[in-house]
Image (cartoon, rainbow, N blue to C red; front, side, top):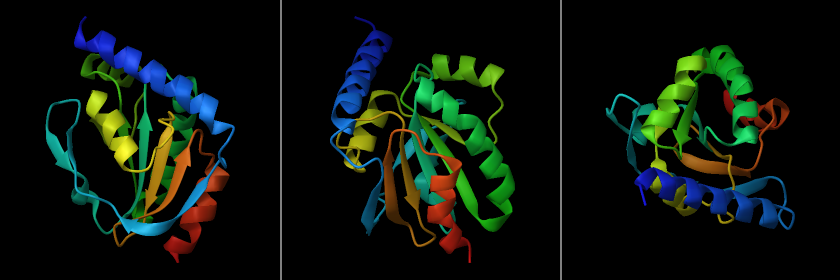
Length: 171
Protein backbone atom coordinates (compact mmCIF):
# COMPACT_ATOMS: atom_id res chain seq x y z
CA UNK A 1 0.00 0.00 0.00
CA UNK A 2 1.29 3.49 -0.83
CA UNK A 3 2.30 5.80 2.06
CA UNK A 4 -0.49 8.19 1.06
CA UNK A 5 -3.06 5.43 1.49
CA UNK A 6 -1.68 4.62 4.92
CA UNK A 7 -1.86 8.26 5.93
CA UNK A 8 -5.48 8.52 4.81
CA UNK A 9 -6.46 5.31 6.60
CA UNK A 10 -4.70 6.38 9.82
CA UNK A 11 -6.26 9.82 9.64
CA UNK A 12 -9.77 8.46 9.04
CA UNK A 13 -9.40 6.06 11.97
CA UNK A 14 -8.18 8.92 14.13
CA UNK A 15 -11.06 11.13 13.03
CA UNK A 16 -13.64 8.43 13.68
CA UNK A 17 -12.20 7.63 17.10
CA UNK A 18 -12.01 11.28 17.96
CA UNK A 19 -15.62 11.90 17.04
CA UNK A 20 -16.74 8.85 19.05
CA UNK A 21 -14.83 9.81 22.18
CA UNK A 22 -15.44 13.55 21.88
CA UNK A 23 -18.92 13.19 23.33
CA UNK A 24 -17.39 11.93 26.57
CA UNK A 25 -15.01 14.85 26.96
CA UNK A 26 -15.46 18.50 27.63
CA UNK A 27 -15.33 20.46 24.36
CA UNK A 28 -12.35 22.45 25.65
CA UNK A 29 -9.52 21.53 27.90
CA UNK A 30 -7.77 24.02 30.12
CA UNK A 31 -4.43 22.65 31.15
CA UNK A 32 -1.86 23.32 33.81
CA UNK A 33 0.84 25.18 31.88
CA UNK A 34 3.44 22.71 30.63
CA UNK A 35 6.43 23.44 28.37
CA UNK A 36 5.95 22.95 24.66
CA UNK A 37 8.58 20.40 23.57
CA UNK A 38 10.90 21.20 20.68
CA UNK A 39 10.03 19.71 17.30
CA UNK A 40 10.92 20.25 13.65
CA UNK A 41 8.70 19.85 10.60
CA UNK A 42 9.08 20.85 6.95
CA UNK A 43 6.96 23.43 5.17
CA UNK A 44 5.50 22.79 1.70
CA UNK A 45 8.82 23.77 0.08
CA UNK A 46 10.67 21.20 2.22
CA UNK A 47 12.38 23.76 4.48
CA UNK A 48 12.66 22.56 8.07
CA UNK A 49 11.19 24.76 10.82
CA UNK A 50 11.73 24.41 14.56
CA UNK A 51 8.74 25.42 16.67
CA UNK A 52 11.06 27.67 18.71
CA UNK A 53 11.29 29.89 15.62
CA UNK A 54 8.17 31.62 16.97
CA UNK A 55 9.27 31.68 20.65
CA UNK A 56 8.06 34.74 22.56
CA UNK A 57 4.78 34.90 20.64
CA UNK A 58 1.35 33.56 21.51
CA UNK A 59 1.35 30.47 19.31
CA UNK A 60 -1.87 28.90 18.12
CA UNK A 61 -0.86 25.53 16.71
CA UNK A 62 -3.57 23.87 14.65
CA UNK A 63 -3.40 20.24 13.51
CA UNK A 64 -5.64 19.91 10.45
CA UNK A 65 -6.20 18.00 7.21
CA UNK A 66 -7.44 18.91 3.75
CA UNK A 67 -10.10 16.15 3.93
CA UNK A 68 -11.50 17.39 7.27
CA UNK A 69 -14.59 19.66 6.88
CA UNK A 70 -14.36 21.20 10.41
CA UNK A 71 -10.67 21.94 9.77
CA UNK A 72 -11.42 23.73 6.52
CA UNK A 73 -14.27 25.63 8.19
CA UNK A 74 -11.87 27.09 10.81
CA UNK A 75 -9.20 28.31 8.41
CA UNK A 76 -10.88 31.58 7.24
CA UNK A 77 -11.31 32.65 10.88
CA UNK A 78 -7.68 31.78 11.63
CA UNK A 79 -6.58 33.84 8.61
CA UNK A 80 -8.60 36.84 9.87
CA UNK A 81 -7.27 36.50 13.43
CA UNK A 82 -3.67 36.18 12.17
CA UNK A 83 -4.08 39.36 10.16
CA UNK A 84 -5.72 41.22 13.03
CA UNK A 85 -3.36 40.15 15.83
CA UNK A 86 0.02 39.46 14.17
CA UNK A 87 1.34 42.87 15.23
CA UNK A 88 0.38 42.03 18.83
CA UNK A 89 2.52 38.89 18.86
CA UNK A 90 -0.01 36.22 17.86
CA UNK A 91 1.25 33.52 15.50
CA UNK A 92 -0.93 30.81 14.01
CA UNK A 93 0.91 27.71 12.81
CA UNK A 94 -0.86 25.01 10.81
CA UNK A 95 0.39 21.43 10.95
CA UNK A 96 -1.16 19.38 8.16
CA UNK A 97 -1.52 15.68 8.83
CA UNK A 98 -1.66 15.24 5.07
CA UNK A 99 0.90 14.50 2.41
CA UNK A 100 2.71 17.40 0.77
CA UNK A 101 0.89 17.06 -2.57
CA UNK A 102 -2.59 17.35 -0.98
CA UNK A 103 -1.53 20.39 1.01
CA UNK A 104 0.03 22.06 -2.04
CA UNK A 105 -3.22 21.57 -4.00
CA UNK A 106 -5.26 23.06 -1.15
CA UNK A 107 -2.91 26.02 -0.75
CA UNK A 108 -3.12 26.72 -4.49
CA UNK A 109 -6.80 27.60 -4.00
CA UNK A 110 -6.68 29.06 -0.48
CA UNK A 111 -4.21 31.76 0.46
CA UNK A 112 -3.17 31.23 4.09
CA UNK A 113 -1.22 34.00 5.82
CA UNK A 114 0.46 31.82 8.44
CA UNK A 115 3.01 29.02 8.20
CA UNK A 116 1.80 25.57 7.16
CA UNK A 117 4.04 22.67 8.14
CA UNK A 118 3.72 19.13 6.80
CA UNK A 119 3.25 16.57 9.54
CA UNK A 120 1.94 13.52 7.66
CA UNK A 121 1.85 10.45 9.95
CA UNK A 122 4.43 12.06 12.26
CA UNK A 123 1.96 14.92 12.76
CA UNK A 124 -0.62 12.50 14.18
CA UNK A 125 1.97 11.12 16.61
CA UNK A 126 3.07 14.65 17.54
CA UNK A 127 -0.51 15.76 18.22
CA UNK A 128 -0.97 12.71 20.44
CA UNK A 129 2.26 13.50 22.29
CA UNK A 130 1.01 17.07 22.82
CA UNK A 131 -2.21 15.92 24.45
CA UNK A 132 -4.59 14.87 21.68
CA UNK A 133 -5.58 11.72 23.57
CA UNK A 134 -8.63 11.05 21.37
CA UNK A 135 -6.77 11.76 18.10
CA UNK A 136 -9.36 14.39 17.14
CA UNK A 137 -9.03 16.51 14.02
CA UNK A 138 -8.87 19.45 14.17
CA UNK A 139 -6.79 19.75 17.32
CA UNK A 140 -5.43 23.10 18.46
CA UNK A 141 -3.00 24.21 21.15
CA UNK A 142 -2.50 27.67 22.58
CA UNK A 143 1.03 28.33 23.78
CA UNK A 144 1.80 31.45 25.81
CA UNK A 145 4.76 33.78 25.30
CA UNK A 146 6.80 31.75 27.80
CA UNK A 147 6.47 28.62 25.66
CA UNK A 148 3.92 26.85 27.85
CA UNK A 149 0.87 25.00 26.53
CA UNK A 150 -2.05 26.66 28.31
CA UNK A 151 -4.99 25.24 26.35
CA UNK A 152 -5.85 22.19 24.25
CA UNK A 153 -8.87 22.15 21.97
CA UNK A 154 -10.04 18.91 20.38
CA UNK A 155 -12.49 19.70 17.58
CA UNK A 156 -13.52 23.06 16.19
CA UNK A 157 -12.27 26.26 17.80
CA UNK A 158 -14.34 29.42 17.37
CA UNK A 159 -13.11 33.00 17.29
CA UNK A 160 -14.91 33.68 20.57
CA UNK A 161 -13.24 30.73 22.30
CA UNK A 162 -9.79 31.75 21.03
CA UNK A 163 -10.26 35.38 22.07
CA UNK A 164 -11.41 34.38 25.57
CA UNK A 165 -8.09 32.59 26.04
CA UNK A 166 -5.64 34.95 24.32
CA UNK A 167 -7.15 38.29 25.34
CA UNK A 168 -5.56 38.19 28.84
CA UNK A 169 -2.22 37.33 27.22
CA UNK A 170 -2.41 40.40 24.98
CA UNK A 171 -2.49 42.79 27.96
